[in-house]
Image (cartoon, rainbow, N blue to C red; front, side, top):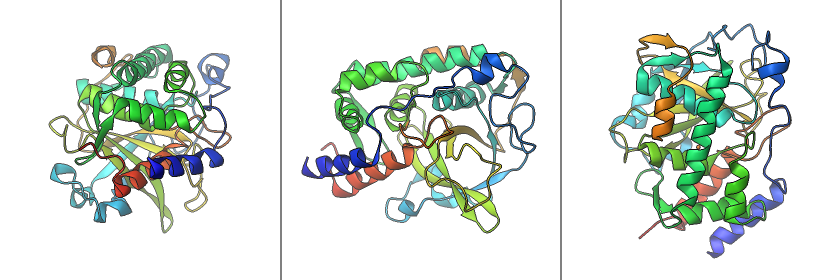
Amino acid sequence: LVVLSSLLADVVRARSSSIPRSSHSRIHLSDHPDSPPWNPSSQIDDDGFLKQQYYRVPGEWEDEFPIHGKHRKSNLANAPVRIRQVPGDGNCLFHSLSVCLSRAEKGADFSFENLEELRQCSRLLRQHAVDYLQQKPRRLLFLQGKESLRSKDLVDAAAGQYGCTGDEYCETMRQESYWGGGPEIVALCNLLKRPIHVYELSSHKKDFRLRRMACFGSPKFDRKEAIHILSADSRFPDVAPGRQLESGNHFLAVFPVDCAVKRKVRGGDSRASENTSNSIEVNAGGDGGGGFCSWVTLWWSLVISGSLFIK
């Protein structure tokens, strides 16, 4: 508890006093229907896919805390991925997961022709994530490897960063455009019983690599295909390697290129959402994802100290 209190105090001093919320949630979705719902770029096609393929690399933590099974770090080599943009309206975490679930559950890409359908799926994911965190405080949540912790402990740690109670944190997170992160990702990973792997941008000479930050749900839920998301600078891909923000402020969907796509569907897999997460800090101009780096750093510090283990 002493270690936990000390680490959270450091985070509180470094972050805002309230949970960030996007102030431009409807700009691209209604006011400018002819503009893409993300920063326009010649490197992004009409469906939001980045034209370039990227490669993943293991995180530095994997030498000390290796992931075993099919997601071990040796399997990342020579495995390219494609990245897909999602609207930057404060709900980017849930948009990214909705898009990934459509591919994983139906083998079909979510169509952005009707963005309201994406918003509906994302709202469901948001509510399911908070329900899962709040309804059973003593529920055991699986993190990564053999680590786990109680739902209440996770919520209290997140709430403590903003000087609020766990219930206040959850009720705030239920509202649209508040940035989700680590706790919500963990909740959805456990609810869906599907691994969620998170990456960050890493400079590699004149290009980017996607460095793995966390493998939530692996190997516990490896029977299901993992879904992948990227916490990145919202200017990506139009930012030079080495010039990106230290902590990402926007989530994007990531797809290994060997994942077959049967067809494009209008809307998403709302059924998958009903069968059914975020970090809470950002730099100006983004809509979410920024606090995830801080959250993962805190989480790994607690793992190393032993504070997170459920005996």
